[in-house]
Structures are given as structure tokens and as C-alpha cells.
Amino acid sequence: MKEGPDIAQIGSLIGDPARANILTALMGGRALTATELAAAAGVTLQTASAHLSKLEAGGLLAQRKQGRHRYFALADDGVGKLLEGIMGFAASRGHLRHRPGPKEPALRKARICYDHLAGDYGVRMLDSLIEGGSISAMGEGLSLTAQGETHLGSIGIDISGLRSSRRPLCRSCLDWSERRAHLAGSLGKALLANFLDKGWARRTENSRSIFFTPEGERRFLALFPIEAGEPS
Amino acid sequence: MKEGPDIAQIGSLIGDPARANILTALMGGRALTATELAAAAGVTLQTASAHLSKLEAGGLLAQRKQGRHRYFALADDGVGKLLEGIMGFAASRGHLRHRPGPKEPALRKARICYDHLAGDYGVRMLDSLIEGGSISAMGEGLSLTAQGETHLGSIGIDISGLRSSRRPLCRSCLDWSERRAHLAGSLGKALLANFLDKGWARRTENSRSIFFTPEGERRFLALFPIEAGEPS
DNA sequence: GAGATGCTTCGGCTACGATCGAAGTATGAA
DNA sequence: TTCATACTTCGATCGTAGCCGAAGCATCTC
Image 1 (tube, rainbow over the protein chains, first blue to last red):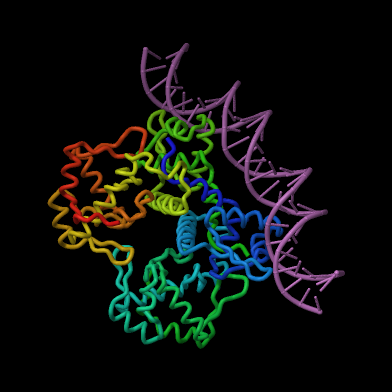
Image 2: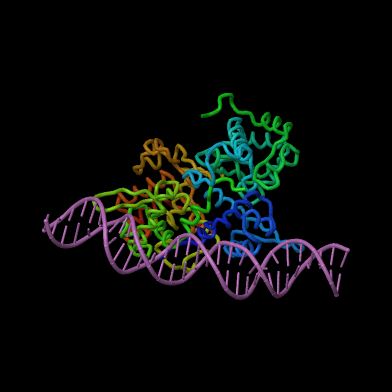
């Protein structure tokens, strides 16, 4: 009767609103302290502590002690991928926490998805890379072309360094706001890090949204052009 | 504060053991009645009915009335994909419902994963198709080659018919027992259907495992050879 | 040392939701 | 019509899990 992996266990871990808030906050990619996560979840510190223990025991979170602080982060890339998948699914079924209208426009424009760029700008970037022949799409899979390696190398991305990691270089990730794919994987991570390094954009404090400077926005749009006619 | 899709809602839907059992049972691909699902979940009919209502309201299940029966099935391919992802993740964290040892060997050898072949045989089939040049793998993505189209056409798979569907032709799906990829997508579905049609294998009644006849097994292994040295 | 900060543990309260018995509705068969 | 089957709805029970106040550790500062 009972066969296979226990999906109920991880479902119930994600199913509690406070824990879901914690996980969503950690999708921002940075490690946060228990106090910060308690605030994000809207519960007291004691309650958050109990939740964090459960999430850690379940293998979703990893913690790092640093002085009297305890920093929590998603355990690994697999957790980010899992949450992305659930978010994409939830969005496809209309399970939004607020009205689906044009709310939180900054978040829809550009935000961080675990460690890479998502939202309108994330989708645009991938579209442009595919149009320009830097990335080729086969079915659901993405791969970097030789041309793309040169192109991205010229803006300071060290592809060979990325290849050495165990993680896939290119991965497509369904964007819940745009309902189209954007670029994940170690390349997606490196590109976002590159923009932040260059000062084109910066993270915002208490949100997953990414703020582009006027200059950074200009350069980003120039670097990733798309054909005049916006796709429907 | 609250931003993005509500992962807690679908998490809690999956998080209840009875509902998880129902969903797992429906991963077998066939539509089942409320009574059958109640038995699979180990609860009474009333309880199951309440769960089924919630799952349907959440967009995970679709029902079809047929006389005095009510058949339930996963709402669409997206639900199957979601559950696959969660199962793969749960297995990677060791969240198995029983000891992870060599239990349920039939299930590990060959089983149905929503609508395609999984387990050792599923993994072998994909490996063989890639080795033989019928499918090319780029990163996480799979695509059918021209050679593969000819090859599979010769055993009775109508590729052009499959292409017309909205669903991707090839998709890779992480196998929780083998921890490696097997072939999903409409091609994966068509291949399994082909084996069942030919009488090489048949479904078992109350399990997701697939039973191969001796003759079917012989032909399957011949059709999908792999290099002598088994990968570690 | 004393005091502050960050976090965990303990204990008790509370509420939500899973559960089932019983009754009600729909479809089919005799 | 009457009975049987398949399922839903109602109502009540009950357990568990989330929650917070208070107290207890641990780490840093002074």
C-alpha cells in the first residue's frame, strides 16, 4: 500500500503559512537570522524557532552559527528548485496571496528568484539570449552556444569556472508573474551577480525585488535587446 | 510583505497524509472512483469525499461523472509534474515511507509515473535512447533527433501526431528510486502505451508497478540495449 | 563581574481540521 | 415503485499542531 517517497511530510512542512513565509523570504537568496525570519513570518521569535527546527530537520534549511547570530538559508539548490516549481504551479492555479492585478509592480519587473534574476527583466534577458543565438532552447532544456560563451565572456562571465560546478549551467525556471521561462542555473546566478557587482542594480532590504539604477537599466536593456514587436 | 503565489495552500493540500495517499494513487495514471480512493487513503468514504472536494477546489484534481460513479484523476500534466518534483525531492532527503532498503523490488524495477515508464527500466530506456543517438541531451533538456524519429517510427510511434499536442515531446523526470532521469513528456507516454498495446507488459491492479511478461521483457531489453559496463 | 542581545526550551492555551456516524441526495436496477 | 449502490452533507468529537508568555542558555560588550 504505502510505497515510495513521503510527499506528505514535505507538503506539511511547506503547508504551514508561517513556514511558507519563511521559505519565501529565503528565496531572496540571502541568509537571514531567526529574528528577521520571525518578522517575515509574522510570528514571535519562539514560534519561528520551532518552525526553523522543523524545517531544518526536514532538510529544507541549513543553519550557520556566527557569533550569537544564527543564519538560516535554503539547504541547497534543490530546495530552491522545488519551491520555484511549487510557486509556478500555485500561480498557474491562481493561488495568489493577493489580487492578481498589477500589484507590487517592482516585484513583477525584476526580482530575485533564489539566486537569479526573475520577473519581466529575467524573461527578457533569456528571450534576448535565445534570439541572439547565445543560448539554444531544445524542448525544455537550455544550453549555451559557443557564440554565447564568447559573448558572455566579453562582459565578464567566466564560463569555464561555472562549468566546473556540479550544478547545471543553464536551467529554465518558470516565472510565476510572467508565466514564461527565465534563466536559472549557475549561469543565471553569475549574470545577476555580475549586474550587482557592476552597480547596475541592487537588492532591496525587505523584499525580493531588484532595483535597477537608471544607468544600469539603460545598459541592461542595451545588452539584452529584443525584437521590436513584443510577443503577446 | 505578502508577495507572490501562495505555496502554503498547495503545500497543505499535499501535506495531509490521506490526501497524499490519494494523489500518489492517482499518479498511477488511471481515473479512480471515490470509493477506491478512500480505500487507498485508508479512510472512510465521507472523509475521502471531503478531501476530494478540497483537492478539486485547489485545482489538483478533475472529476468526471459517469452514471453513479464519480471518477477522479489528476487535473492535468502540470499536477503530475509537480508531484514528480516533490517525490524526487523527498527521496533525495530520505523521506521514505518505509525503510529505503531493497523493498518493493517490482516497483523499483518498473512502475508507472503518472503516464510514463519509471524505475530501473525507465532509466535504462532513456540511457539507451541517448546512447543510440535517438535522443540528445543538452543540460537538463532532451530532444528527439531525426534518427530517433525514424527509429521510434519503425516500432510504431507516430511522432508527428505527438508533436501536434501542446505538451512537450520529451521531458526528463527525476526517478526517485534510481535518482537518475527517465523519459517523460508525450513521447514517454506514447512509448509506455506502445508496450502495453503490444502486450509486452501490463499494469497491476492496486499498485503503480508494471509487470513485464518474459517475452515482453526479452524484447524490451533487446530494443533498448545499454553498453556492457553498467554505470556505477 | 554585570548587563544586553539572540535564540531555545518549557508549559499551557486555543483553534483548526481530520475523522466518522448518521442522515440526505442522486443514479441505476428489479 | 422499491431497493441497492455511490456519493455528499451535517454534526459532533477529538487530537494535534501552532501559538505565545516566561524562563533558561549562550554569546558578546563593557
